[in-house]
Image (tube, one colour):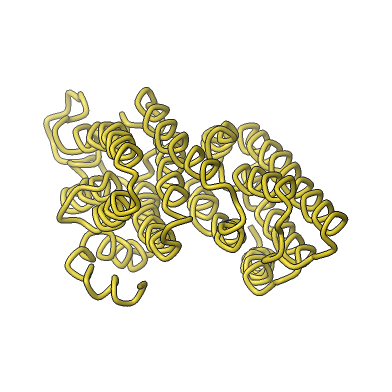
Length: 348
């Protein structure tokens, strides 16, 4: 892609998200979401592969539907209440419609079906943008809407997403689909605690972005898109495979890695709020997700790709990818757990 075009598109992505962050009026927030969607479409379709074009079409249709629902919800609220302000979305019909639209935007269950299919059709870097940056603007709106939304609805969305994200990833062999279901499960963890401790939602979102970035950048560096491809990674780069296995376990939420921190604090908050059953279901759903992360770790570290050549790794071209972002995100994804008390002080 032409570097000037790429610069314009990435700037538009930043502009759309910033516009939604800064807006207090529904129409301005909707405009930001639209700029965001339109800026990523050329990035998704840049390879001119039928899969990429199909993924782009599916993404455009779902995002356009969600944007139309948001506009309809805000118009309904303005008609019934006379307010366009985001914080004054108080009519039950309008709030339910708005949260349904935003759930569709970020891929929460039960409106998650587009996400694995779309992610499967994209290259890894565009998939990284879709899994991280594109979640920020809708999440900003969800956080602002949270006080007006029915708690039962948020809990239902959170539980459904955690269970579907864990259950859906069990049978997958494609890494991008596994990461899509991982994304759905993590979104569930963020939504479940939103009404009780929004700062924990933002903490979970931050850690999720760093862990997912580390995973996507590693897969890009090793050009892996299937589990079977991962089995060849050990002979090429043992150190990278070791850190990747740890990042995947961090995504699963195992101590003493960063990913344990948000899960631990969220379960603690749910128990404080008198919701032991919800906390138990979320913990069990995390075990489902952990199974497919362990499956990836097993494929990378404990299996060797079947070959008959008794020699060192075959000749291959050197990757031109920058390794500093990968090193940075991996370090954050592995080592933040000791900083939990300090982070708690900052977010409380």
